[in-house]
Image (tube, rainbow, N blue to C red; front, side, top):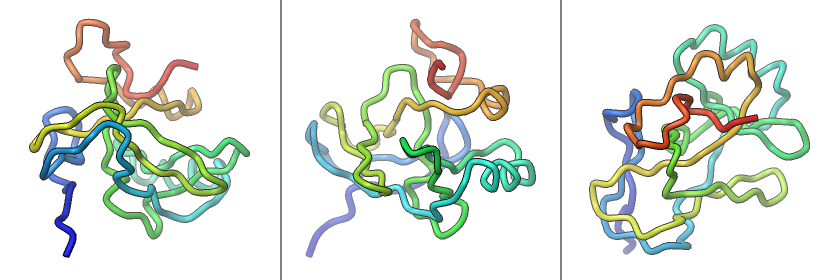
Length: 139
């Protein structure tokens, strides 16, 4: 039997977040970002009705994985300017891997990019001295 390693719960950074339940080693694959693979246009239209949260993850071919449709808890990953996780794209799938060792109860963070339309809605509150003041990566 394999113990759960991560869980979603309230985050002091933004809404819900993902947190480690047990120690995680650097390089470990944690979770797949699941959801409907669709176009940016369709996902953006959905986002307008769910303002304040974004559950889309961009793929290199221009499509996105929309975690609000058939997604899992990976959609609750929050941004930080100093992430402890990274997203690795394999085909039309995204896997989240630990960049560093992560302690139990530590929140998991990634860094990411999005269109300027969506970027304008998200301010970062990670508190790091080098914070960009945006939850989304620089263009």
